[in-house]
Image (cartoon, rainbow, N blue to C red; front, side):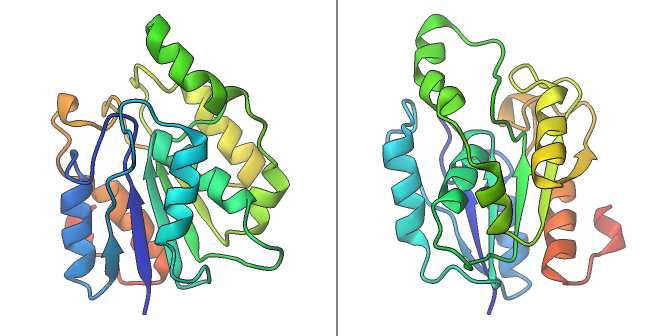
Length: 198
């Protein structure tokens, strides 16, 4: 049985925006879904978020799929780079994924983001532990520039999907459903895609 873990972003929770909708759509397809509330969501730290995600995983194998939003994407990448050699998950779908740059932050937010952005990633290790990457991005995201999607394409051979005019894919932009994320995940999982959702 396939398992999907959906990792929310900075200052979010498991009920944020489109996450409950996606979880419901997957459960309707008999997929096991885990939607955790990450610790200290307003001040996320690598040393708490990555081990927390690791603790949720029953077994890292090709039946495991990870979905992340914003900081959740970088959490997934850092989780993947720490996996043992020859362990590989089925796929990862990122929404507003980034690795090096965030814009529009105030001074306090920049301090929280600094370790996430400046602690190096071993891109080769990240890539080696996942069969397929997708990054869904918007052309008007106030925090994640389009160049970040291009980095994920170049470093992880990620499929890029432009979902235009979606901002940062949050409730502030009235995003409570995200068919692009569901469709891309279904493709990665080898499940039928319903054309009514496209």
